[in-house]
Length: 260
Image (cartoon, rainbow, N blue to C red; front, side, top):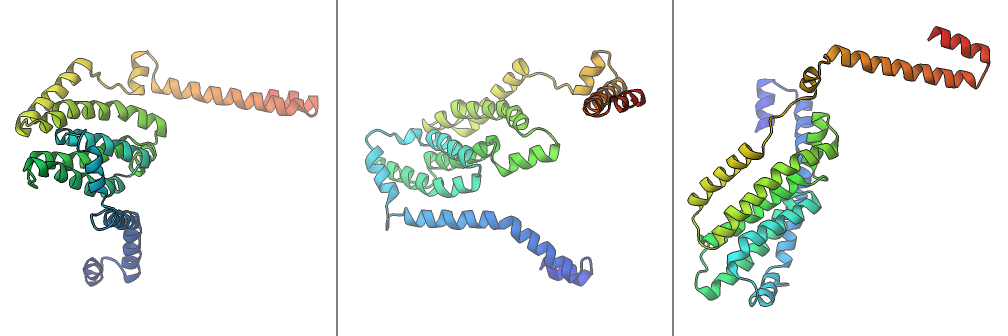
């Protein structure tokens, strides 16, 4: 429909429409491939094949309480997403297993309801953990593109965004997933989490200062800074000229120094 609309309004030529469609399809190919592979893994792990959820229930039923499922899924999804750099693959891999395991743990308690707060918390833990791990991962495509688009060093970008993400993650675990697992209502926990984050920002946050502002505070103007950089460049050029000239004719070396 988009191609037909652009062709009808003559906003784009047919060749331009085909090129735009090809570029869009190419950008979605990886996501589609991940979803297809995730569906394949989910099919292999269902109860008619490997029955992964059933095996996990038998192994963990005596030692794992369903109250901890939201927290465990959040931490597990964060670890997997951080290691793989992909939130899509993490969601596709862990969502079927987490839902099946949580449902199986709730059946003996006669609380196997899809709208149960533990089921909803588990689903939210997978989604949030996958996004958190992808956001912090240095091999994530979004992290690489962000650092490249902003022109900053990649590791500097990763290290500067890590404290903010970790702070929110810690607050979410201790004032979100753990209390939700033990029956606290989200409409109480969400305001508490916002207040905690606000207090952390007030007591530990610092106002951002750009490098230019620091130079101005030190009494150095931007023009002086650029001038000092040019002088350093000239000095390096003179040194390189002297080195190269000293290897050849001494007279040419003196001439090059005089010219410099």
